[in-house]
Image 1 (cartoon, protein in one colour):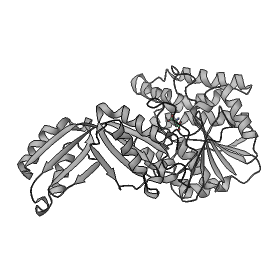
Image 2 (image 1 turned 30 degrees about the vertical axis):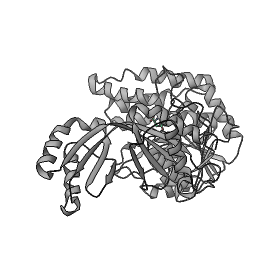
Image 3 (image 1 turned 120 degrees about the vertical axis):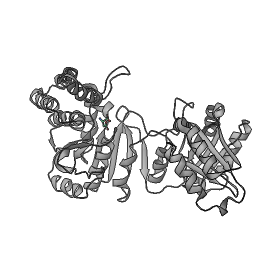
Image 4 (image 1 turned 60 degrees about the horizontal axis):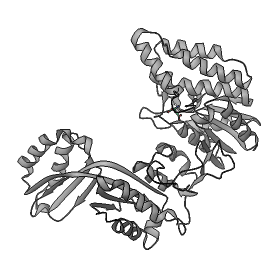
Length: 431
Ligand code: ASP
């Protein structure tokens, strides 16, 4: 069986939904379908989920969800163009739930709920409410019983459709995942039925090696591992919901990112392991505006608890370091620049309590993460990164490697950020 999740752009309007229908019908294995709420039809359009959050806020204001009219029109227009019955009575029910104060999660979940109800009719599929199947713990984890329950429901010959993005919390109320969370529902569905593949249909023909707004023509990554995709998320690449890997990873269910607008394209496969010989690197991404706080003190290691106290003072003043480097007589931490508002208080406290010989907050750095299983497996991959930088006369100000052996992080002065990204991309573009 194949589990297919269709994102907001794939269900944004009737013309897209016709494409979805032909994708589903072209393969009888595509039996279990997960849908998002209708997304944007063009760049100035509104996502249904955003409008639903707005409805919730309006109810908090004067008790009336004015924006629901836009939502109603959107679904009615889609039903009409698909040639199916209107869903007015379930729209009314959703509106009265929102106006009765069921909260933001309930409001937001209605986008997926209504989409799945509408499409169950069009695809002649059986509707399964995620609220009856997916149980979430207080801290948002999926309760194991969810997999068993869903598996037990998928026994017939026909197709099934489930709304993405939500389940039920411990008190039985609707609880949503974080934004983009229909990817997680797709992964839960895939694991429940032990799918052969989890197809994640979107509007790009796979993951790109770098952000196309920053580098020219980044290539599509054909294959990468679960570990690599997690690492890409950690260095800021906005690819696939970071929590959606967990349910499928331990069950070796490959994820295939596909394009609804180009169904012939093979897309990207996310798998357990891969051969890195031709493609050592799968992604290059970056984060700007980091600062380093640096202390130096002779015989640092003799001062018991120095590092811990340094960290404690930083944390108390809102600075949560993401990287650290420890030397013989020095320590530096790297944290996002926006956390440095309370730095003066932190600095005086550090001076007073830790009496360092040198205490400096260094100027802004940008970090570039290079991700690929080829880094630990092949000779010369890291060297190629540094050669690319040095041949463009870019000074390396920070290096971190080993926290994860598939990610190499280099810090450069922010003014060199774009050039650094481009030069590293060029170095691997053709490989
Ligand atoms: N509709 C939700 C959102 O906009 C969830 C999703 O599309 O995955 O975040």
